[in-house]
Image (cartoon, rainbow, N blue to C red; front, side, top):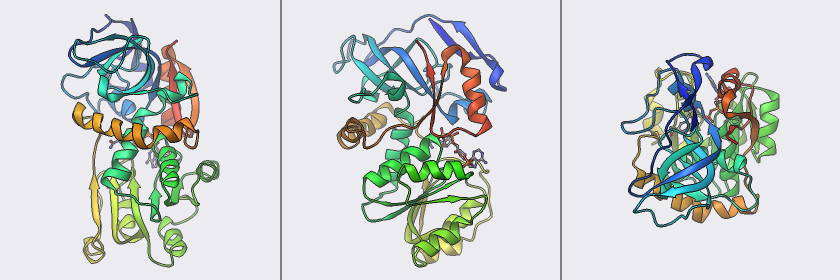
Length: 326
Ligand SMILES: NC(=O)c1ccc[n+]([C@@H]2O[C@H](COP(=O)([O-])OP(=O)(O)OC[C@H]3O[C@@H](n4cnc5c(N)ncnc54)[C@H](OP(=O)(O)O)[C@@H]3O)[C@@H](O)[C@H]2O)c1
């Protein structure tokens, strides 16, 4: 099969097309004939050598795919050859064939193209776990997501809104803020022009927000403590602005805040299967009605994966970048 491999740690040009053997499914795995693969920021970190694949995972990048089931392992029971699925993968999505456990696959939502379906798993699994399971967001609460126009952010805005929250989002340009509002953000904050702490404080009569999903870290950590409401929760999913910070922990104590975080990729197949089951029950019907949909930024052919990474690193994209595997 054709695959895109990381020839050595480095810039986008280290992504090289290779021929690899088609992997065979064992146990409860399924083999997917990949038609499209989502590109995510963790792929960029993996390419740079900063995010090695967990033990046992493919060395090829690619955490999400959509396509048809091509073969099933001896213990796989849910899918049959030819079924159209989208799936979270342990790695190896930038290829014509990819393995994953059958419980980490979901049906392609009604009316979705495979390119759109490939844009779903990584951000929907991440947002569902961190905003709803870990963050405990409930209808009527207020929610702030940083990086509102990112793959994760565009998913978080739509799901938080669909489940009845009041949504604030930060982003780095007026165009990105406009996109956040179109997706349902009640207030988008251009962080280059406005201070998100002042904005959310003013909009909530000084109360602050109930939940913050943060991928920036750095000096946002102390400011998140300031922007959070009493008994507020902050969920950390990345540190694009740096993992170290000076923060006033008195605010955490006085407001009884909960500051937590998680990473999806190293979690067990069973854990990811539980998220998939909840998504199928609670979110897939919303996708089927197009009340929620991925925001498609650009689609590149698999052989041009390096251009997709370049696009992501330039930081102008809004929503998801996807590879067309053909
Ligand atoms: N913990 C987990 O389980 C998990 C799972 C998936 C992804 N993630 C992480 O979540 C983040 C978003 O992923 P994604 O695939 O949605 O990425 P993405 O689309 O590239 O989004 C990154 C966003 O961060 C904003 N940003 C703010 N400060 C930044 C900085 N210093 N450098 C670069 N970007 C900055 C960018 O837009 P502005 O112009 O608004 O700044 C951009 O919208 C990534 O860091 C990724 O590693 C975590």
